[in-house]
Length: 537
Length: 66
Image: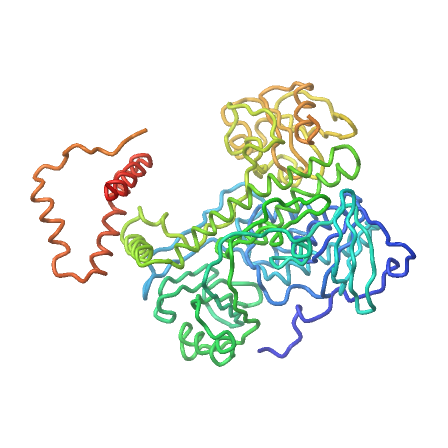
């Protein structure tokens, strides 16, 4: 392994004594977040930007150990832009569009993600999770410097929890001993093995996949192109699969499926990993190992993501296979969905039942992700002779005939979730394009004043497209800003928001999702839709 | 809902059947299974209609349970 000090071995937010530890009575905070991973940090930034005081507890003081999640999709990048830290990630990240699929000893076809034009962000970037978290911590420090109320506590480990109807009692372990505090709301972002979930004795059911995967993050000066390469049954890993994917700094993610009955310790020996890599890359290949790990996975979720005053987000609430990059990507969409709802509830402008819609909408997202990731896993690792025969039939046919290529499933890459059927959705107009129907995330498009996405989010907005409307609206203490747009901002804008219509009105949620839409402006209708979207109807 | 055609539809039924068996002649079972899988996928794509495919799968399963 390399000897230089790596970013994920350096304490980034070391333990410091908090005033809470010396308080005579437990201090009550509006929001406490458990876990400073991508989801916990994202949620903390979202809340702090809205001036909600937030305490983040992490059981260590460093970014993710090893690269772990490496693939970030467009929708999370848009969320990160809203959180003020998307672009450094896009600049550092590796943008890729081309994928190649190999079967046995040959390439059977390649595909291009063909990203749609008229979007600020790329379809995907590859970026090590440690960089991702490092940028989030930098953003958090920037907010602190601006006086935003955000407190990140390293080496603060949740050791006991008491859930009540109107608050949560917490006991925290630190290097200087335990202390107690309380939270009006607790957000558990403490990963697939969530201690919060375990201590509350909550369910986490689903399907176990009996397989192991070996990750070898390999540093090499290689002239492999910036593409995703996936092998089914290659000569260097017979009967199994393998993946090669580029990360920044000449780090390559190499992932070997290695089966169920393995000797973990033996597989993780550097000499054995090197043997596998030489078989794949050639005997002369020169490389260093940055990080290696063996993982197994399950596809499962909690029944509900809300339990009284405790809200679960990310892997703590739902777990998927890595195929399709649906873990961190969906966790960020959880945080995105939760931030504005919690703000309204804390402000007292919406009832706390609005937070039930967080669970409903994100359970819908989790179901979609679990379905897709289970199907990918069944294709990649067939569980019976017959499923293997069909899988290989698809691959053989895909080499010769185009029709079989859509059946090849090496991971259906994360796409944003549309909250079809959500109780927060208001009226729809069938004259407008299907892709921007209520429940959908806004589709980016160029406008005369920049990217549409850069002009959306963090408050309710009305898009008044080719119609007259007042500058702003208000109902029950919740404001709506009006954004006036012309029907011909750009061809992509017209196509995505109007279709054949000449004018339209969209009510947008603070998380950039469409709440309701019409083909003419009616103030009463907009206010009624706002009530629905904020759980006050 | 569209149903799969269950009326006789192949001219020269005996010829077709003989040809179907002939492609499996002398092959090990694994090879035959692979050919059958490819054949099913080719035919399914040709049919295309999802409701017809579901109907065909249902009938194929049910028929064996009589």
